[in-house]
Length: 90
Image 1 (tube, rainbow, N blue to C red):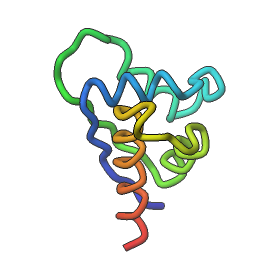
Image 2 (image 1 turned 60 degrees about the vertical axis):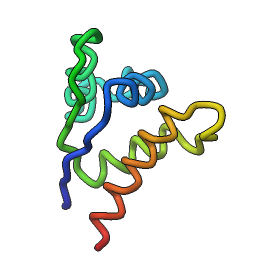
Image 3 (image 1 turned 90 degrees about the horizontal axis):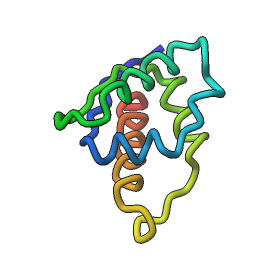
Image 4 (image 1 turned 90 degrees about the vertical axis):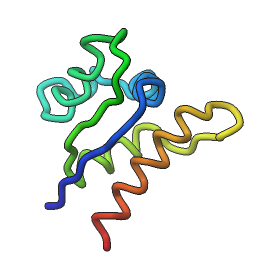
């Protein structure tokens, strides 16, 4: 299984977490990884999290298509998630 680091800005992180239902993943490593990103919503640093290929697929499945004109921060976050997925396939 492939693993990789996902780097997001603070704004992208908030947009991503606002569109993923974390409650569906309680008790899983994905829940632990993503919920630790929201522990301090006022932090100003960019976020990074180590994700497996399966976790990346779960995030993409959860969010689906995002129109960049409607939600640019979420669109940028999804683009980074998709780039991470692509890196697993190289």
